[in-house]
Image 1 (cartoon, rainbow, N blue to C red):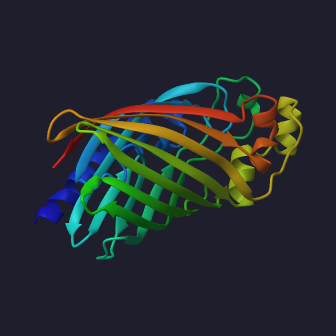
Image 2: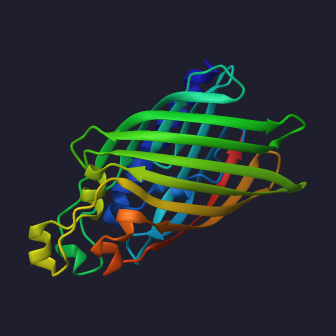
Length: 279
C-alpha cells in the first residue's frame, strides 16, 4: 500500500511540474534536471520544490526562471521511483549499489527567443523521450549522508521532435561537513546524435536566408560539460533547504554553431533553490 500511495504522490507532483512548465511556456526551455538534482542520491524518500535560473535555450546568453522539482519514493528492497525535473526514472534492482530501470523525459523545444535573429530560425519542437537510467552508488556505512553516485541516462525521442538520442553522464558526491550542513558537487557531460544537435543547434539554408547566420549542420558528439557545487541545510529532522550554482560549457560541434558563436554564449550559468521534505 505504501508503494502504491508513493507512486500516486509522484504522479501528482509530476503532473504539477509539467503543468508549471506549460504555464511558463517558452520561458522554461532549459534542461530542468540541471535545476532539480540538488537532492538526487540523498538516500531519503523526499519531495522538493523550488525555483531555478538558467539559459533560455541551449546556447542562449539570455536567462529565464523555471520550476525545480524532485521526488524520490522507495518501493522496498532498494527499488524506487524518482522524478528529477521533468525526467521520471525507476530502479527495479534489489541491489545496494547498482540501479537500472526505464526513463521518461519531456524536453521542451524552442518556439521563440528574446533574440530577434534566433527568432527567425526554425522552431524546435517539444520532445517526449524514453530510455534507460543506469546508476552505481557508494554509501558510507557509518553515515548515509556521505555518498557517491555515478550514472547515465540514455534518452531517445519517440514523439517526432528532435528524433535523436541524448546520453547524459553524471557524477554526484555529497559529504556531511557539520551536523546540519552537507556540501557536494555535481558534474556531468552530455553527448547527443546528429539528429538532436541539428534540430537544437543547426541552421538550415532557409534559416540562413531569414536570419543572416551562416548555414550549419552539426554532427553528433559532445554537447557540454558542466559542474555545480551544491549545499544542503538540514533545517529539522524532516525539512531540508538545498541550493546549487553551476556552470556548463558547450563544446565541440555545439560550440561551433552560429546560434552559440554569433548570438549566444558557450558558457551557460544555472542555479536553483529548493525546499525538501524527507520521510
